[in-house]
Amino acid sequence: MMLSRTGEYALRAVLHLAQHVDEGPTRVDDIAQTLSVPRNYLSKILHELGRAGVLTSSRGPRGGFVLARPSEELTLEDIVGHFDPLDDRRRCVLGREGGCNDDAPCAAHVRWSELSQSVVSFFRKTTVAQLLVHPAGAEAVMSEE
Amino acid sequence: MMLSRTGEYALRAVLHLAQHVDEGPTRVDDIAQTLSVPRNYLSKILHELGRAGVLTSSRGPRGGFVLARPSEELTLEDIVGHFDPLDDRRRCVLGREGGCNDDAPCAAHVRWSELSQSVVSFFRKTTVAQLLVHPAGAEAVMSEE
DNA sequence: CACATTTATCATATCATCATGAAGAAAACA
DNA sequence: TGTTTTCTTCATGATGATATGATAAATGTG
Figure (tube, rainbow over the protein chains, first blue to last red):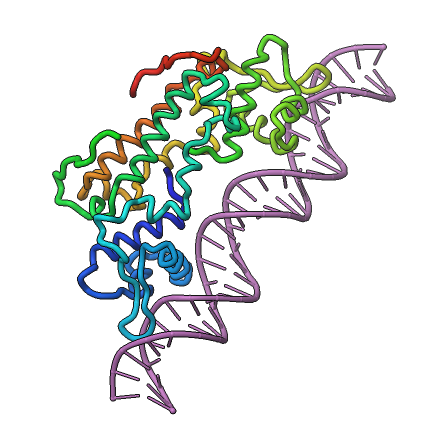
């Protein structure tokens, strides 16, 4: 929170793939056009998601990208963690190099730790399947922590 | 969450000033040296904090920067909001341009809204005074929300 | 095999953030 | 008034994220 543009592109692209999973491989061009995202830049991102084991790619006619795993097994961290490391979110607000939880944690640090931990959990526990569009009136399915 | 380096410098500098508030104006050089932060860069940041009404500056011998208000009245948003706008933190994880809460909010979006709102509240409600170093064993003084 | 299609890769450009260095301007004070 | 101290301002550079364009490599199909 928030995501880099790269991480956001990655997430939106994977979401798009999850929504069209039964239509075979999707071309970068199609995704880029649908999402209004620079083609070659997205290409590079998808390639990295391939190396991260999130996507599978195939070249030539009828080629493109496909989810490497069912969307129920893909967490948000799987997708954006490589571009926006979750560890960065746990650092002290003040940039203190580790004095927060050990040395002299002030009240605000405690509260901050709780907050950042919640955000990290969100990325770790939310799956792509849960992000797919629901009918209006959808209710929360995630429990706290 | 997290802060830009600029925002972090601003926060640490103000915290430093709050800790030395009874010693009169503090020079940029002193702050920069204490925090190990580039002098001229910090100078620019402090100047902007001055224009934002957070600090007061005076030139010449015995000059420097002073808090413009008591630390109890300075929120974290007052300090970092100008460099890291809180509004940015409330955007949809997917970069959807406003479809989140209106159109078809999915369960994850609801949870995300709660989380980002909590983070925003943290910045709005925490004061500099609350960030001052406490003895180890300090307990949380902030309430949820 | 030849060709069209598609991803993979590379070289470069752009932009914002972060940082450095030097000169300008105000204020205190002898 | 002159000098020192300090913030203020401007010009420039470094770095990483973002973006673009061209070319290479792989693959299916006739």
